Amino acid sequence: MMNLFSLCWKPFGHGGGDAVSAAAGREGKDGLLWFRDVGRYGSGEFSMAVVQANQVLEDQSQIESGPLGTFVGVYDGHGGPDASRYVCDNLFRNFQAASAESQGVVTAETIQTAFRRTEEGFTALVSDLWSTRPQVATTGTCCLVGVIFQQTLFVANLGDSRVVLGKKVGNTGGVAAIQLSAEHNANLEAVRQELKELHPDDPQIVVLKHGVWRVKGIIQVSRSIGDVYMKHAQFNREPINPKFRLPEPMNMPILSANPTIISHPLQPNDSFLIFASDGLWEHLSNEKARIWVQGSAKRLVKAALQEAARKREMRYSDLRKIDKKVRRHFHDDITVIVLFLNHDLISRGTLLHPPLSIRSALDH
Image (cartoon, rainbow, N blue to C red; front, side, top):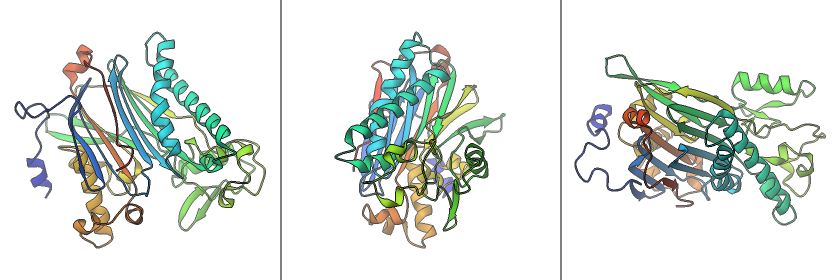
């Protein structure tokens, strides 16, 4: 089957006059799967796909390509869609403002500033809604951001979404899968150790429940935007659900909104980037994703769904018939954005006209 799918692969832009129908790419739906294939952005071609599992889609994503280079965001919400939608509405806007303040130059500091302002804005929103919609205090989102500015890739991450780089190896035609993002999930020993060092007087800072490590026995990720009930004591009280209320006073934030940021100078053998929420990585390894990426993000999502079906000893065709909400018992919402890198465009610094701005469908 791997060989079959590899035959379907052709580099975008080489398939004849109608291979690229528009810069934004072809949009389509297949049940709970939404996809956009074969689009152009400032440094090459892109592909994106989302499959819904929850009653309301909690994943959000976007691609913005213009004067500040290319900005990619994958926002994996939890507890509801409020935080991920807020971030999709505001993080890029805050990034634009922070970059303008630094004379149009993108740095780790401008990205950090955008994250901080987005967190502050969402906390203010929770405060405004506290009397009417207090449950928004228990929503949060992982945030994975990639920025290509000039010939540098910046990756900023909160939570357990992941970006994997496909890098050509020598002259063999082979491609290595290299994970670029650091994840913040309590199932990782390094994350548990970090939490224990930050909270030395709290023996319950991480708790093993049903075989899964959770921060305070509640949440798996240690960093996010939102989840203000785990950051500010005034929101960890009635009327939020008792399961989110801590038994002891909160004298410092338990979760952080401070992203891990790396910069990677793009090299001619860097071939593509896969940005995806953890719903994909739950079913595909970095290496399997590297194999399946040839073609489109939609192929990656379908490969993950086929693996989810296989784990439950069912056919993929039967899984596709299961409706949202019930589908969550089989897999999570899954978002994938793939950027194929064109180094001629990257080295020339060519701007895309008109600029590209795409968000995944809000709900399917």
